[in-house]
Image (cartoon, rainbow, N blue to C red):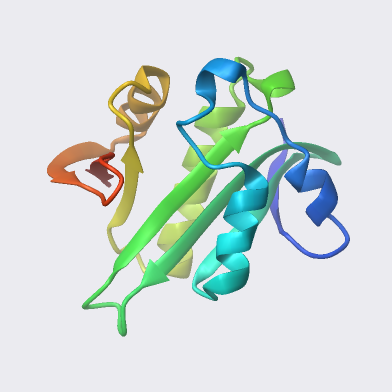
Length: 147
């Protein structure tokens, strides 16, 4: 596995927007197209394709919201692995690599994410990486986790 991230750009956007999840996962995350619409609207978002070599396996989006590194929050807000590549270790590898990237890019500040309580697989994955619940909820009722 040789994961790397590529920013979403006009050349890869259509392919990235075609990523699929299983029917039972719908509702846990917005579609990639919905994420990209949000990224088009808010320049703070950094959408990425997740690649294993030349093969697109997933999508992630992160962003920092605040006026300085002392009054905002860094969000690892979206992560999905295409249904054809789930169960192969890509999720854990992608989260670990994203955490490393975000710590480098933002000088080791806290990383937040939110997850629906029913998304047990994602919660288990995030806990393995070291995230823990803060006791807070986001505006959609998702539980907030912090690393």
